[in-house]
Length: 214
Image (cartoon, rainbow, N blue to C red; front, side, top):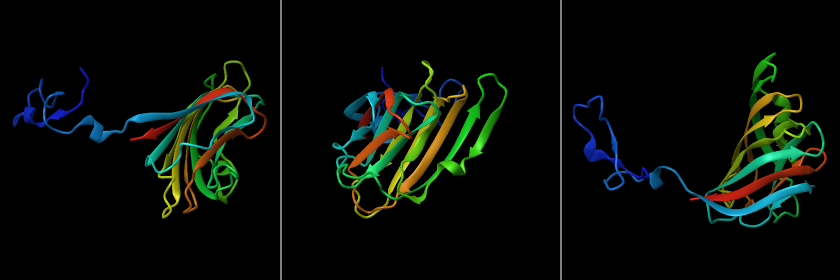
């Protein structure tokens, strides 16, 4: 049976080791739908030696949050980075000014080294270029990267456009890398399109799914 509500009536004044909070789908209380949102699939883009994967529809005022999930992104060019940019003209131009920050953790495949920290070379300071979200991907057959990008209230005409991304990958030198990127598109115009591409070469393979979060 799915857990859907917290049964507040099941809380004991004196908790026992076996009963602190009881979950009951028929009880009154806080519905799970009020705690977290559901993902509503809008579109799917699949790469096959593709110059880019662009989402030019489905990003509007319907949802407050949009989530892109990317699966097994594999580059055609070794040491290429997986990047994204925003558009305010339906995909005519991907050049929204952004300020971003990035940190990462890494671990060598042979256990020879680890690292953790802020990476200044991967951020933008009021830059219009594409933002890196997966770094130095390799072309080995088993090498790829996966993760997500959340874009918050892109249709707002009052506030800047915040985003958060996290990605895990097998780097071109065999490292496991966990990267975090966040920032904002410095525009009060509605963002209505997003494009993903490699810093060089094509996206050899991979899938990106766009969801609205309700």
